[in-house]
Length: 72
Image (cartoon, rainbow, N blue to C red; front, side):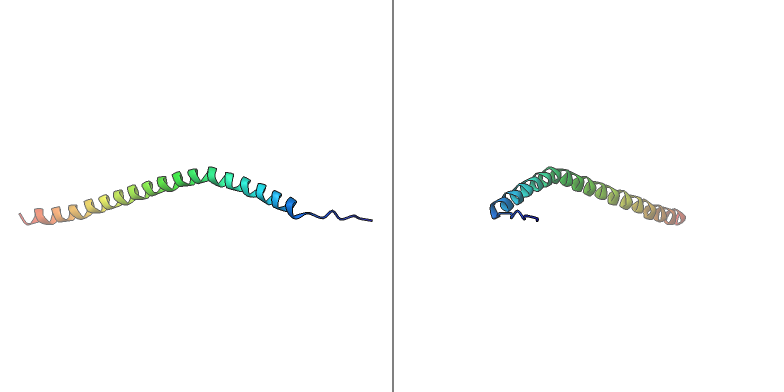
C-alpha cells in the first residue's frame, strides 16, 4: 500500500520563498545587463538617424547647388 506524505503549509512556504529569492537574484543580475543593452541600442539608433539625416541633407544640397550654378 502507498502511503502519501502530506506537504505542510510551512514546507510549501519555505520552498516557494527560496524559489522566489533565487529568481529575484537572477533578475537583479540580469537587469543591469538589460539596461546597458537598452542604452547601447538607443545610442546606435540615434547615431543611425543622424547619419541618415545627414546623408539626406547632402542629397538635397547638391540639387540646389546644380540649379543655382545653371543660373549664372
